[in-house]
Length: 181
Image (cartoon, rainbow, N blue to C red; front, side, top):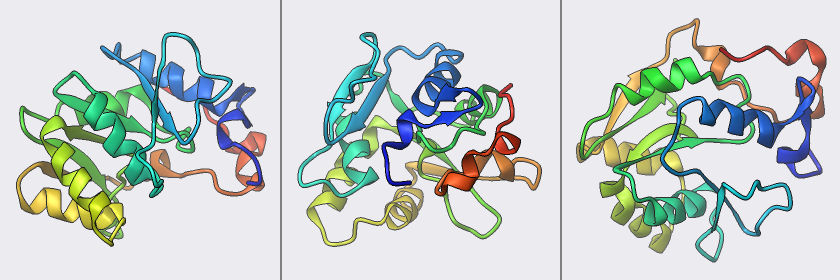
């Protein structure tokens, strides 16, 4: 995109504001934003969590937030998934239990690790992944599923559009924006 995605307008609002509104509808006990640096746009009631250095992309941010989280689970929502709805996230929340989380699995058998819920018990697995050579979240998801810490939730054809992310300026056109439920 050539700029901080969080500040791009989508449906008349910056992406960070859209995603924060989606999350607030779930009434989380705590809200984090992770990154290499504390963003200027971060509201005071949202806690900044620095990525574990050296940054390994989303893996670093997830590991840092899991280490910081006080709740039993960490719900993750990427800034560039503006079609996600509180309704779907509530559904996903009903798929977890103590000790295991839930990750949506798309039709192509890829998981969506950035619209998912991780148990705190996975924090050590994230740290091990950071210490290794494979920083792929898909690999980590497969491992967490194999050891019983994640449940894979199939995404229906109707739900697929919720997982469309913004990667190019054309993805920001007004026709692309739809209100969240």
